[in-house]
Image (cartoon, rainbow, N blue to C red):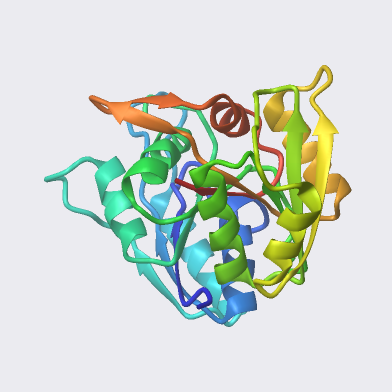
Length: 260
């Protein structure tokens, strides 16, 4: 399996075709010859100073996708019978992978929608910081490993969807217990049997946050993306996130593949 159908949510307040989620999604769709559904609407129409020219943003996204020779469908309207968070999740359910930003401005933010999509779409999600300006790099993906089911799902999604040449497995020591009966060499060997060269590194947390440590170690490994399990659950649509998941969303520095 590879990526055949992608979904990008690009709110008109923050969409930028030169960097951030939109630029990354277009480069990813081009690399995989995937069809890209681009959904762009005004997300926040109530906060003063955040109004945008939605038509101009849609035109810019169209121009960028055409310039990259990406097959795409542009969606600029939606029914108001359900909330925008559920509209985005519905689109995400019908695609191999989705791309959303982590901007937290406004009463309803991209980060809020990303949290909803993580737990309610049933599909993997890539969050990309607004300032990120590096095109998709397919060679090496880092994968956070803590022996948990979401981490296993993220590793599987990374290998199946992206087929990277190298997987750099990362464990951060000192954040939480990680009991295991499989030693690091065997874990790397078993991962390599799935068609990718794998290495395993244990790094100390030190005085870093867990999200900062994971991203720093991923960058040091030469990875263009970090894959990790999304931990959390929802109660009455209020999300309780795991420490690493919450930290990543607040301090996202690189593309993060999140699987739940």
